[in-house]
Length: 356
Image (tube, rainbow, N blue to C red; front, top):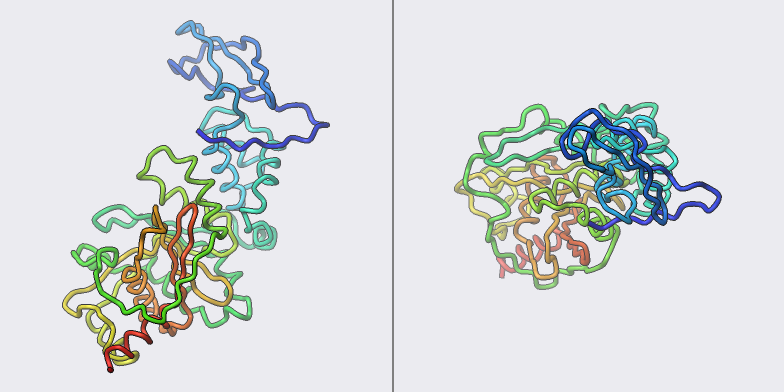
């Protein structure tokens, strides 16, 4: 498992890992005593002897390494949700049995500062939004389980920036999905991720880059051993620690009458069926650069072209919020590649083609 090698200041002694444990890692027995130390390059690890199973154990799972990356990232995530260093250490101990020195957490925060851009917002919003108020999470049973979450503290801060003042309708929509999501629609068969609508991309610019989302994904996904948890782990980390992600797993839907209305507004070239509702869940919603970004994580992003899926998301959000498509940017990414395009440009091309 990959680790972050934290550069400790030379004037500080190495931290003691596992100074306090609750039980034996092997048999869960409580009759344990200290049994010396193991000295690594950057840490000293407490060894323990269990009288019940007669085994020596260390609470640190990887010889020669520091802390598991999954614990590091979870501690950082909790801190940016608004918990104090002491509260984070307490939660880590409850979950792992390991005593986390507060100065070790401080080193991790410093090491990851470039990737965790929520630092300024945390300082400004902490007095107004306690951790349990900052983020609201709702479990959605839409054939499979989705964890829809909105960061209301970050959303409040971003909407009060002058360039984002027109996006309060997005906040209202996100709140409405918390209060009264039409769950019955999501039991249907027509999902945006499976939509095969064909858009003419002639003249549409798809810009490629390697940005912060790629770097964060490259770090976070190293910590995931269960592939089924990749999306959820990345979503939870970005929602808590960056300065732009305001919601994840956002439920969206387009009704037949919505599609008819969109065709009236934009022209007849929108290639969507009006027979049944279309539904989906947006991986990430971000507000940055005066736009609303619709992001989808796609492994092997360079080989993917999820244009139809992202267009459905953009059209649905435009329909539900009343915001013009000009307000949205669509993107997909993985650890190495990031691609984005403007849905308004795609629609303009579709309308032009249909009228010729």
